[in-house]
Length: 263
Image (cartoon, rainbow, N blue to C red; front, side, top):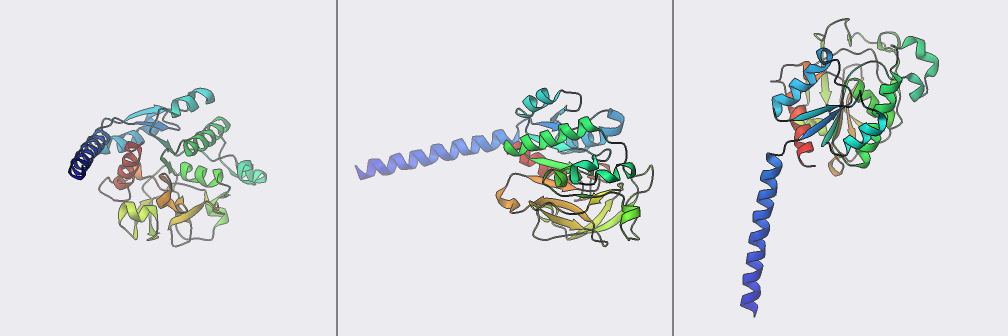
C-alpha cells in the first residue's frame, strides 16, 4: 500500500510539473493587450507603440481616449495592463491648487476623469500600471499627492527640466537601491531625457520615490512594499523617446510587458 502511495505521489508531481511547464510556455507566447490611456493622434503618440512593440511585436493595444467611460472600463477588464501616456497638465483642482489654474496648460477634463477611473479600476483588478510623464503625475495625484505647478517659477534649480519643442534635454537621476526601478535596471544612476514643467510636490503616502534628480525632484515612484503588490511604476522622463539600448528605456518596457504577460 505504501509503495502504491509513493508511485501515485511521483505521478502527481510529474503531472504538476508538466502542467506548470505548459503554463509557463503559454505565458511566454501569450498575445497581450495593453490599454493606452491616450494614443491619438498617432503622430504624437506613435513612439509609445514602437517602444512597446520593440519588446514584443505581437502586442495589441487599445486607445481608451475615444471611448465612453463605461466602454473603457468594460474593455479594461479584458486588457492585460494599463499604460498612462504623457500630455497636458492635470487640472490643479484635483490636488488642492485650483487657484493656480491660470499657471497651468489648458486642462483636458475628459482625460483627467477617464484616467483616474482607469487607474482606480486597474488597481481593483490588480493589473500592471505604467505611468510616463503626465502618467507619473496622475499616479501621485490619484493616491492623494500634489504637483509643483511650474518648475521654472517654483523650484530653485539650475537643472533644465524642459526646453520648448524638444526631447533632447538630458539630466542625471539617482536611483534608490530598494526600489522597483533598481530591480528593473540594475542601475543606481543614469541619464534621462526631460520635457515637463510640472513634477511631484507632496508625494502620496501610498508611494515612495524610486529616483531623484540633484535638485531633489522625484523622477520615479513605485508602491510601498512593491514586492508584494501588482506592478506599478511611474517615471517622469520619456523612455519611449530614448535610445532603446539604455536600461532606463527598454528595460522598463520589458518589465511592464512581462508583468502583463502574467495576467
